[in-house]
Image 1 (cartoon, one colour):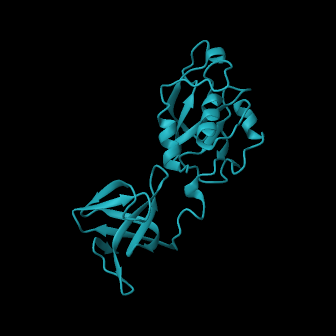
Image 2 (spheres, helix red, strand yellow):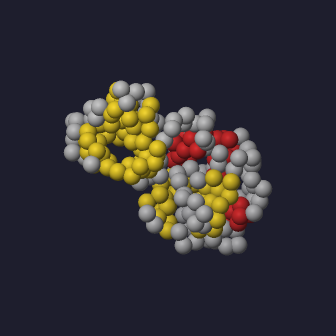
Image 3 (spheres, helix red, strand yellow):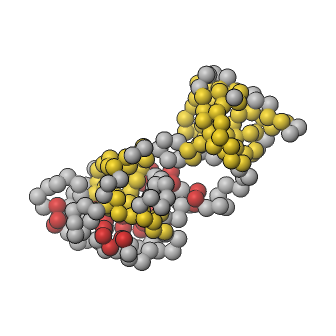
Length: 229
């Protein structure tokens, strides 16, 4: 199962490593992408970065133009750079007007066209963005979370010493962060799962997070962990 978290873990592990996936011209930027989709999804993609604007995509992969969607970690992004070949990378963080990616062959070495260069972490704005390619992440599918979310914008104040933030609305899911007493959590939806009322929000890194606010007993939130305002 490929989720955004597992895909980002894979791509982060490649930082400072050089991948020559197709065996031509060293570690080019597209080699990292071919390795990414090849190892994670078992499919093949070919061509220079600019070819990814129109080449055929594997089943389940979708291409979007700039502004069509909200870019998220794990997405593949193509840039109008080093023309006519273009440039390509994988997003690991989105922060306002900037995108942080893992990209290969960005060191500017004199033999970059023939030998390439290792993967690096690079932060860019949207200026030269050409397109976004979204792989079929399991956690993007409607079937992944079988919960009835209700849209609601609000904020929740933590009243316990520490409150866990989780990767899914489940007490058995991964703890990814914690809020201390007095922290205010802004959320945009909620659901009821495993006997708890969970609020959910999109983190600054682009991953959706979940926080239990209290036990759901006799149709009411017992507010064990905080208060709504």
